[in-house]
Amino acid sequence: DTSGRLFKSIHGNNASLHAFLLTVLGFEISRRTGRNVFMLGTAASIREGVEDARIVGNYVNMIPLVWKTETGEIFESALRRMQKVLAT
Image (tube, rainbow, N blue to C red):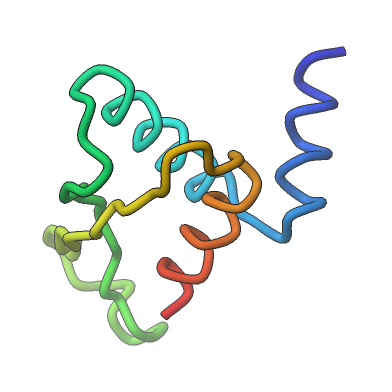
């Protein structure tokens, strides 16, 4: 089934669903605009510990990500690179 193959691909590349969706978005933007280098934005939670759990408020920051791909780059290569960027 399609979802099974999708998650097998994600796990086979040691990536998260978040990295997968950003990679899909990057390829689609590149396809539609013809640009191989541009900025993407994603959200990241900044709650660092249990003591922050009781604080009310929005603890999300936007993080800019540079999308750069070579013509003909395969999806799995871009997915692994995106996962590395998100992990740092």
